[in-house]
Amino acid sequence: MDNAKFLVVEDSPTMRQLIAFSLKRFRNARVIEAADGVDALKILAGPEKIDLILTDINMPVMDGLKLVSLVRQNAELRDIPIIIITTEGAEEDRERGLALGANAYICKPIQSSHLIKTISDLLPA
Amino acid sequence: MAEDPRFDKFLELFNKGKEFTEELLRENQRLRYRLATIEGEVKQLEERFHEIEAENKDFAARYVEIEEQNNNLANLYVASYQLHSTLDFREVIQIVEEILINLIGARTFAILLLDEKTNDLQTVASEGDDAMPGIDKISVRLGEGVLGTVARGGESYYFSQDPRGGAVSIDRPLAAVPLKIKDQVIGLIAIYKLLQQKEAFSAVDYELFALLAAHAATAVFASKLYSQSERKLNTIQSFLDLLTTTS
Image (cartoon, rainbow over all chains, first blue to last red):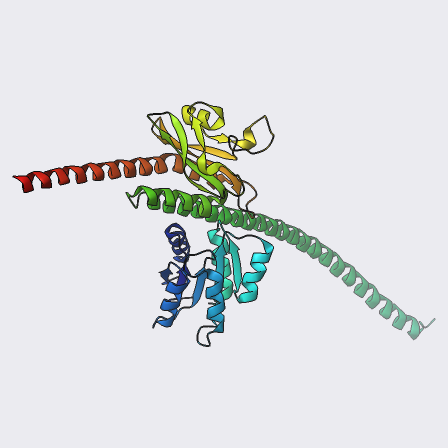
């Protein structure tokens, strides 16, 4: 997908940079960064049209699960695909994330190729 | 005696039949030859197809390998970039923690620094104390036990290579990586448990350990020096302020 806008919600600057690095594979993609759920909601309420959200779960102020839940309840945002990227690898965590409305669940440490494939599946060309 | 006209007719038909049969035999022979040629060509094409299939598999495997290398290089780049992005000691330690959690997949670990005056290694940061109680306040003499030996010798320790076997403990972590500036060890990283989804260390983890051993050490050392010089600068500045106000 050309000119896609990705919102990366992650409290770790290291992870944000790593994810942004992987997303550079998409032609003309733009990465917007947020450090927590509240920060992300402010960006989502702004003029930028976001094509896909990548969020961590464990973050200060507002965690990723709450963010997923709020996005899915919002009529204007509910169709945005969401990928959870987290250290929480238990099956019940995955089920909870997907049940709240996330489209995919990726465990850290991430493999760039896996992330790209997941995004490509969610954002057809 | 007049010849029977039916005999001539029969002979004529017989000769035509004979010619036709001979023609059929020749055609059959030609087709057999053609079939053999085509079979040979098919065999060649099959061989070529298998060759190309094997080449494709080779390219696919190389693509996966290059993808993995790209991923590893990105990890290494981001880790070194972040480590040298600040001179604040707490931030450097936090970045080391982030690398251990997010890039290596460590669940329980401790970062220890060496006190040069007492020659003791002490925990300055830890994560996952619930899985390994006591890692938040490790204090080990240089040269004692596995951790002390790693700090003295400057060689990494891996539990998987320990012939003694047994269980992971505070002094026998999954991995103990010295933080070194050239040959001088300033501390170490001890990893006790990996994330649930991570079964074992991968090849890139050892690369990251090597990077951490050098870059984290210089980043920690530089940040400590910076904070010390900041303190000294503040003291001198206060002293100068005092002098200028009193004079």
